[in-house]
Length: 140
Image 1 (cartoon, rainbow, N blue to C red):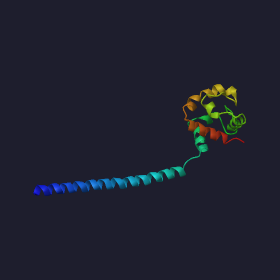
Image 2: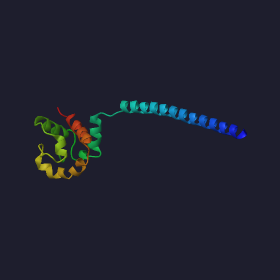
Image 3: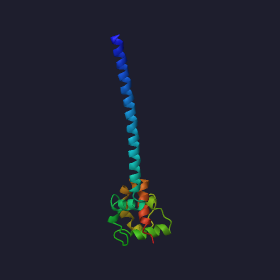
Image 4: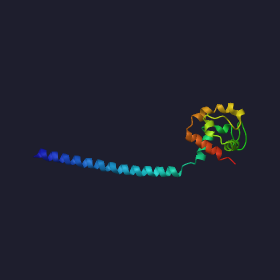
C-alpha cells in the first residue's frame, strides 16, 4: 500500500510539473510575440527612405562621391547631369551600374568608371535601386 501511495504521489507530481512547464512556455511565447511586434513597429517608424539609403550607399560602400558631386563635375559628371541625361534619354542607371548598358552621359570617362563595376556589380538590386532613387532625386 505504501508503494502504491508513493507511485500515486510521483504521478501527481509529474503531472503538476508537466502542466507548469506547458503553461510557462505558453506565457513566454505570448511575451515574445508582443516584443517582436513592438520591435517591428519601432523599426518601421525609424525606417529610412530609399533616397536616404541611396545617399549612404553613394557616399559610403559605392564610393561614388569620389568622382561625382551633386552640382559639379569632378572626375565624372555631376549627379544632376547624370539624372537629367538618364531621365531625358530614358536610360537605365541600374543596368549601367551592373555593366549591362553602355554609358550615355560621358563615354570618355567610361574606362575610369569600369574600375568601380566590381563594387556595383556586387550590390543587390535593392541597393542599386536606392542609388538610382538618390540620383533621380537631384533631377531638375
